[in-house]
Image 1 (cartoon, rainbow, N blue to C red):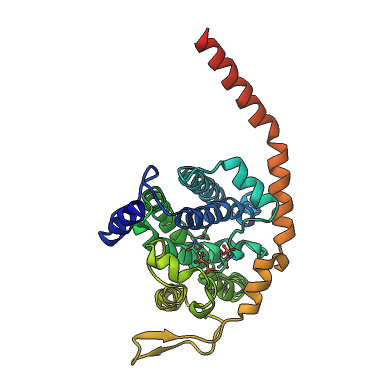
Image 2 (cartoon, rainbow, N blue to C red):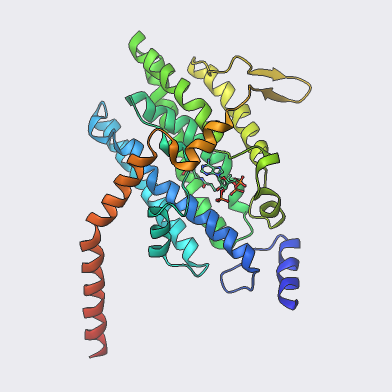
Length: 309
Ligand code: ACO
C-alpha cells in the first residue's frame, strides 16, 4: 500500500518514475508493451526505405537516406535500452517480435513502390510520428521520456527531408508530379491509422492516460496531425485523397472523412500487404547476424578472463 501511495503521489506531482522506483506491475507491463512495440517499429521501419538506398536518384539523396535509415536503427537502440531499464532483456523482446507475440506499427506493412514513397514516408509517416511522440517527451517514465527528446529532434529532420523530396517532385515534370501525388494518395489513410483505433475502441488509452504514459488520446492526436498537414499539402500543391476535408469554423479544426478501421485491424492481425515480407526479412537478418553476437560474447568472455587473471 505504501508503495502505491508513493507512486500515486509522484504521478500527482507530475514527477518522473525512474527505474529503481517502486511501480505497480501493470504500469511496468504497459510500458514494456508500448516501448518494445515502439522499438520494434523503429527497426522494422528501416526496411521500406532501405529498399530505396541503392536506387536513390542522386548521391546527395542517397547520403541523406542512408543517414535517415541509420537514425531509425539508433532510435531502436535507445528504445530497447529504455525497455531494458524495466527489467526485460533485449534478446527476449526480439524473440517476441520474431514469433509475433509483440507488435510493430501497422504503417511499415505497406510497400514503397516509387521514389516518391520515400518522400511521402518522411512527410506523412514521420510527421505523424512527431505528433504522437512529442507528448511522449513528457511521459511519466523517465528513461522513455528522455529517449523521446532526441528521437523527436531527428524525426523533425526526417519530416523535412520528406517534404523537400515531395516539393521537388511536385514542381518537376508532369510524371514526377503524378508520382508524388500517387504516393500521397497511398500513404494518407495508413498514416491516419498509425494513431491507433478510435478512442471508444482503444482498450489501453484510459489507463495509460491516467498513468501519464499517454498524454493525449488517439483521436486528439489524429486531429492534430490533420490540422498540421492540410496547410502543408497546400504549400506542396498536392491534394489529400479525402473529399470530406474542410475547415470547420465552429470546431476550429479540419473535418475529415471516415477511416476504414477494418483495414487497420487486418494489418495489425498480420494480413497487410507486406507483413510476411517484413518479418521474413527481419528474422533472416537476425539469423545472419548470429556470428556477430557470438563473436562479441566470446570477445567479452576473453576480456573478462584477462581482467580477472
Ligand atoms: N499499429 C500496430 N498496432 C497498433 C496500432 C498501430 N498503428 N495502433 C494500435 N495498435 C494496437 C495497440 O498496440 C494495442 O494492442 P496491444 O494491447 O496488443 O499492444 C491495440 O492496437 C489497441 O490500441 P490502443 O488501446 O489504442 O493501444 P495504445 O494505448 O498502446 O495506443 C499507440 C497505441 C498510439 C500506437 C501507442 O502505443 C503509442 O503511442 N506508441 C508509441 C509510438 C509508436 O510506437 N510509434 C511507432 C511508429 S512511429 C515510427 O516509428 C516512425
